[in-house]
Length: 311
Image 1 (cartoon, rainbow, N blue to C red):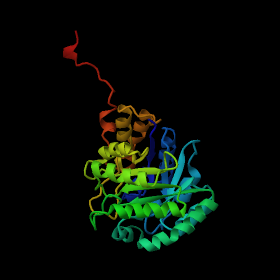
Image 2: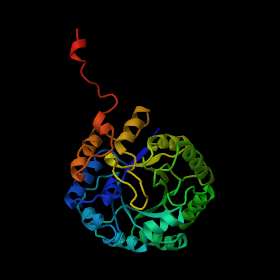
Image 3: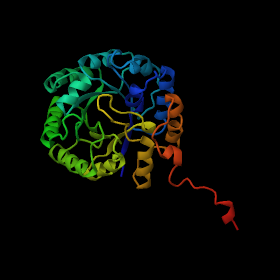
Image 4: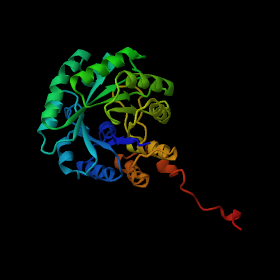
């Protein structure tokens, strides 16, 4: 079975680092990731530099990266202005990703909009993106739970999906922004979404998990069982939501690829090349990262027999 793996570390991970990652380093990391077989790479965000100074170099990053055929380069845009800025840049992203939280409280904390304000902007954002020949996808944050409001009603999730599709959105990500999802919940809710609103292609729906409570990879398996074929990860396990108390990093891309390949799925990702990038990340960010396979090695990376056992 073919699965599609995306990486969001350069945007989702680098945005919350205390020290600014130099533009040249971001470009180098993206160029390395581009040659690993990933389907999409989220490279930056068109947000206010005052709000997210770590990504103030969006234009420079997009101008500097080498575009590898077959890789989709994505930028997050929180509002109409972000979409307009992405459309106006000299080297546009292939795709922009807008975001709304299923929770009203988280939406206001994250992008300073009510639900209706965010939804009212969608038609204009779609128009701006499509006129600039960019695709536009929508991430529904806190799909599986909100740290402020708790449980999110399934009916609310389905209503958002319907409104996104009606607006002409090119793809939808169901995001576990704060790591509150569990495998049973993921399997049941995702299956309901796909049954009621069947996807036009294999990558229309994406699942985006955080590993805050250690269930990230189990949730990926549950998502596959429900019918999803596209998944976000973050190299070396970087990331976390700055507007959700205690929300640690995204699931680790290389750990996910190692698991999926061991299970017999076709990710088209070169795990050795991916690990070479992930092992570089701690020196880039200046601290340890949560990735496991980067430390332990691939599952079938065998070791020499202990000296005392040799005959």
